[in-house]
Amino acid sequence: MSKQMKSTIAYTLLILGSVIMIFPFVWMVSTSLKTALDVYTLSIFPENPTFGNYLRIFQDTLFGKWFINSIIIAVVTTLSVAFFDTLVGYIIAKFKFIGKTIIFIAILSTLMVPTEMLIIPWYLMSSQFGWVDNYWGLLFPGLMTGFGVFLMKQFMEGIPDDLLDAARVDGLGEFKIFWKIAIPQVWPAISALCIFTFLSNWNAFLWPLIVLESAEIFTLPVGLSFFASGEFESQWELIMAGATITALPLILVFFLLQRHIIKGITLTGLK
Amino acid sequence: MAETTTTTTSQPLKPKPKKRKSRLTLKQSKYLFVYSCLLLPLIFYITIRFYPTLYTFNIGFREWNILSPEKPFVGMENYVALAQDPVFRKSLWNTLIFIVFGVSGQVVIGLAIALLLQRINKFVGVFRVIYFIPYVTSIVAVSWVFRWLFMNNGIINEFLVNIGIPPQLFLNSPDQAIYIIIGTMVWQALGFQMVIFLAGLENIPKMFYEAAEVDGANSWHKFKSVTLPLLNPTIVFSVVIGSINFIQVSFTQVVNMSVNAAGGPLHSTITIVVYIYQLAFRQYSMGLASAATVILFLIVLAITIFQMKVLSRKFDY
Figure 1 (tube, rainbow over the protein chains, first blue to last red):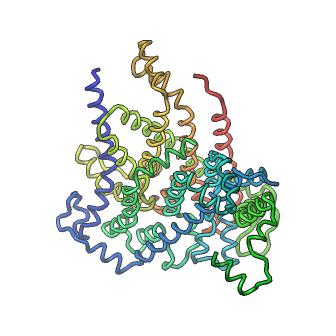
Figure 2 (cartoon, rainbow over the protein chains, first blue to last red; figure 1 turned 180 degrees about the vertical axis):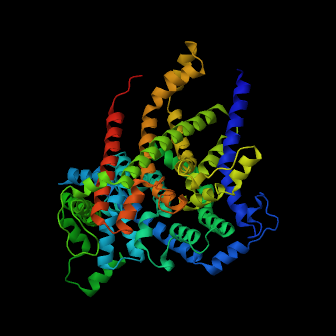
Figure 3 (tube, each protein chain N blue to C red; figure 1 turned 30 degrees about the vertical axis):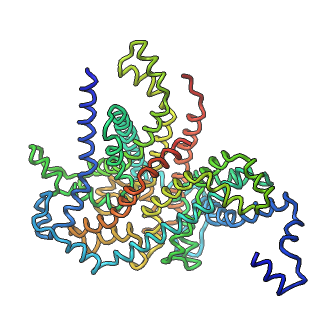
C-alpha cells in the first residue's frame, strides 16, 4: 500500500470518528432550539428556531442559582486543593523532620480508599454538626487530596536544594521561600492539578446528591438531573437547553486553554 | 518596615521583630514552619479521611438502621447477607462487565486514534481538540443527551429504520441498556486515553522503528514488536485509571441514564456504587451499605496492587 493511500485511509477514519464525537453536541443544541411541537421532527436544522426554551429555564427554574453554586464550589475547592496539596508536597519533598515517612505513607494510603466508603460517616457528621444542605457540607470532603500531595511532591523534588538554601542565606522566611521561590518552579504541575480538581468538582454528583436537600443550593449536575427526571420529564427541548447551559461553559474554557490542558494531562499521566 | 515603626512607637519596650527572629536557629525556624503548615492538613486527614474509614469498617460488622439508637455487633452477618443477596451479586457482575468492556473498549479505540493521528501531517491539532471535547463536558449533560439520542422514537432508531433495521429498545431493554451506558462512558473518555497514548508513543525512540525497518519489518510487525512492548507501562496506567473510573463514575451515568434512575430495567444496569447508595440512602441499612463499601474497597485495593506489581516489573527491550 502506498504511503498516500495509507494517509487517505487515516483521514477517512478520523473524520468518521469526528462525526461520532461531534454529532451528540449538534443534536443537543439543535433540539434546544426547537419548539415543543417540532421536537420529534428529527431534523438537524430547527424549522422554527427559538430561544424560548432557554428563557423558560431561567424563568421557571433555579438554573442561574445552580450555575453560581457550581462555580463557587469548584473555585473554592480548587484553590484549597492547590494551596494545601502544594504546601504539603513541598514540605515532604524538601524537609527532614520527625514523622515524615509516616505522614507521607498515611496520606498516600488515602488514595486507596474509595470515596464511597466515606460517604456514610460524612453524612452522619454533616447531620450532627448541621452541615447538611449548605456550602460547607458540600465543600469539606474535597478540601485536600492525596493525589495532589503525591503529584506535587514528585515535582518539588526536582527543585535544587541550593536554590532554597541561597534564599535562606539572603534572610527570606520559610513561607516566603515556598511562595516566591518554590511555587514558580512547579507552575505547570499546579495548573494541571487545578484543571483536574476543577473538572472533578464540576462533575461531582454522588456527594452533592446526598448532602443537598433544597433546590436553592443544588449544583448544576444535581439540578439538571432533578429537573430532567422531575418537573420537565420527557420535555426534551427543555432538557437539552439545560444540558447545553451545563456543558457549554467548560467547553468554552477548554477552547481557551486547550494547549495547557492537554499538556497538563500528559504531564501528570507520565509522572 | 511600616509595621516595625508602629510597634516600636506604641510599645517601645518590646524587642524588635528582627531581634526575636534571630533568637531562633535556622533549624528551629524550619521545624516551626514544617509543623505549623502540617497542622491543618493533619487535622483534615485524621477527621475527614482516617476516622471515617475506620468507622465504616466498624459499622460493616453491625446491624444499624439509621433511626435506631443501638448498633448491635453482628459479626460477619452483613457480609453473609450480601453474598446471598441476588441484587448485590448482580451489581458485582455488572461492575465487572463495566470494567471489562469499558476499559478494553476505551484502550483499544484510544490507542487506535493515537496511532491514526501519528500517520497524518495536517489537522492533527484540530482532530485532537475534537476528540477531547467530550472529556471536558459535564457527565450529567452527556447522560441526558445520549438518553435522548437513544430514545424509542429518537434519532438513532429513526436512522436504523431508514437503513432497514427494526427499531431497538436500547435503554429500555435489559440486554442492551448496560452496553449503551458503557458506550457513552467510552465515548466520553476517549480523548483522555488518546492524549495519554500520544504522549506514550512520542516517548518511543525513533531508532527502534528504523532498526525494525532495516530488518524488513512491515507495519504490523513494527506495531507488535516495537510499539506494543514499549507502550506497556502507558497501557497499564490507562487500564488502572480506566477501571477505577468505571467503578466510581459509572454511578452518575447509571442514575441519569437507567430508566428508573436506580439501575433498571430489572437491575440490568445496577452497579455496586449505585446499590451502596440505595442501601444507605433509600433503605437506610447503614450496616449492609458499609459492608458493601468494604467489598468495594477490597476491589479497588486489588486493582492498585496489580498496578504496582506490573509497573514495578522491569522491562527488557
